Image (cartoon, rainbow, N blue to C red):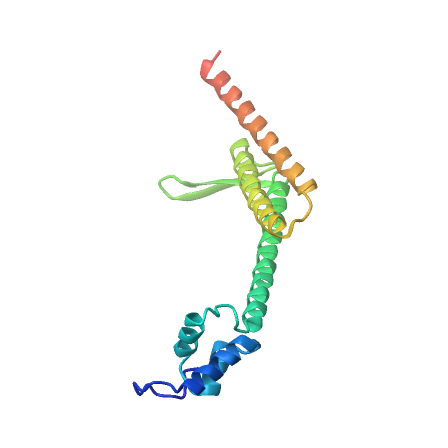
Length: 187
């Protein structure tokens, strides 16, 4: 809220200036509250306080409380996103063992042909693993960010799971590469 006093270009009386500085020294009031009390601008209060060497005498409890509340709200939102990422990673990994529809649309009549396989093809498994690993890694990063800020314990199981998924993915890529190399070599 702006000051109720309009700038007049007149000097503020010494008595008012001293009262402002007394309020700053006493603490417990914000710059705005002091300005409204003495019908001066906030910048006037700040200027007088700075000139008198009183930089930290303003009540900032409301600001500190609002900042703390915002930090908690953001941490809660990160936790929600982190949980979603973990759930998506699990869903992607589960798709590896589920029936999978493969299809093609084409030909001169633009026809649809499809069939259901017991498991996805190797390339789709690789893509599912990669997507699951990415989602899991982002979950771990969010978890680590908040844990580092709060000094919490190590990731434990989640970290081990991410490492195991990474190893499984690397093994699958290596096996696929070996299979393609054998196919390229021919009979």
